[in-house]
Image (cartoon, rainbow, N blue to C red):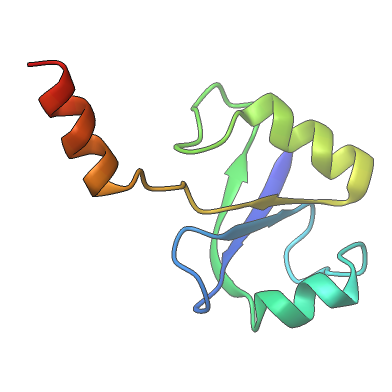
Length: 91
């Protein structure tokens, strides 16, 4: 399955995957409003065996078939203070 990947300039690491380039009919208007103007990144073949970086190909494909889109949220960064505390506790 080929999909089109778009990013937003509102939040780094947020991507929208849809089945056909420039066809946002299946994406809820509220999501498009909060996402902002989609910026085309690339076409990607989910069945090629090449893995996505921050999502599972199978999950993206399933969500696109089921909902018409897949929204990849940015990775949550761990609080640096918490990381330091864990490090000191392990010493």
